Length: 64
Image (cartoon, rainbow, N blue to C red):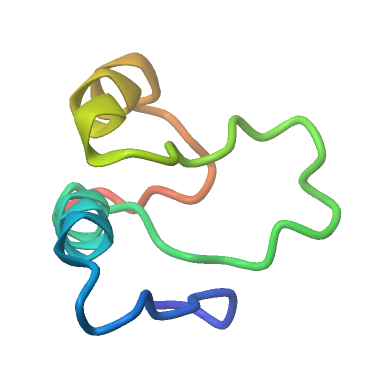
C-alpha cells in the first residue's frame, strides 16, 4: 500500500471501496512530503472515477 497508508475504520465501506478502486488502478499511498504540487487523492468514492480519468500520469501511480 505504501508507508503513508492509513486504514479507514473497518465499518467505513465507502472509504474502503475508494482505497480499493485507487489501488486497483495503480495508485499507491506514498508520503506526500516534498510533493507539494501533486494532485491530492479524492475524498469521496464518487470522485474516484474522474480522478483516475484526469490523472493518468500521477506520480504516485504505477502502471498495472
